[in-house]
Image 1 (cartoon, one colour):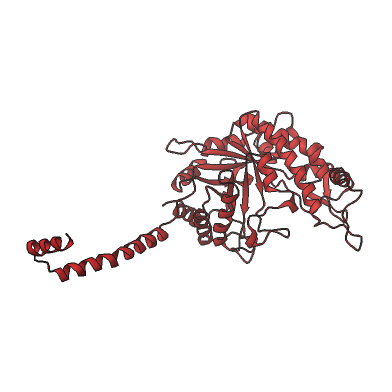
Image 2: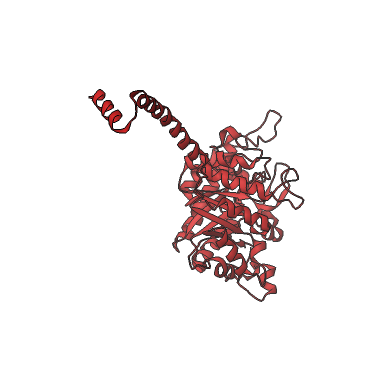
Length: 400
């Protein structure tokens, strides 16, 4: 049959059997070449932008009388941002008049005679020019320099007894006034503005967790009579039990905040430090780690909250913008739907320009790298550091 077919083709088309055999051989050669071409093309195709694309506005962006939110709203549409983060302030410094807490309102609110800067921001960028609704997340800062200035007993203390100017003690957060104010603020902004989510930021422990009240908390948690000690008698600040204790306290506090937000049908998110930043960080080979040293056990916090926002601040950590790909892959592997990646624009003197800002080129590289790593939710923060070149970089990264 094969010979008959060959003869028929030769007779009707003038193609010789030898030529036919050569053509078949060429086809066999071209098939794998075609497959290679497809693979190469796939490899060169840019990764799709994340499903959620956010720009975050810090307090310095929000609490500004006469802010031109219309121009920013247009920029957000141009870069295809479908989500925004808006800072509302701290428990001791709010961007609106907090009923029953008028002493906590910011100087900007006072000088403007009670202007609600948060509402202005939501009204300005919550809905895109084309009429589509953006996801809105209101960000609550957990630092309390104002409360500490009024009552130093609320401050955390390091091993030398020095009080922090910004960070509350474990005890003040666990059972004290700071924790109560923080949870109350979350509940208030959730009920007042009905955002999609409220996110807690700067809620972590540095080395200011060694005051007397904190020692009592540690003993109650660990069952030990004293802090873990080094051979010279000093406190072993990196003992694993310290991280477990801090993490347990934060997880309970975050659960309280989640319950407060949940009463209004609002989700509670938690900002966390990247696993590859800081003295207690994991190595780059272990980006699947977390930050128990700061009280941020990712697994515990994922149970206590509705999601995490991981700080990808490569400009401050001596990192490379391309590392965002590996970080994204690890975060997706841990929880594909409830972890967002925040690309920070802050930079030290070795990583940015004179203003302490990462370059537009590095921002674009990081955004593309995060997409290649499979990130499904990515934000850029803060908007105050975005130049025209940065906005263009975002547009190019988020446009396929």
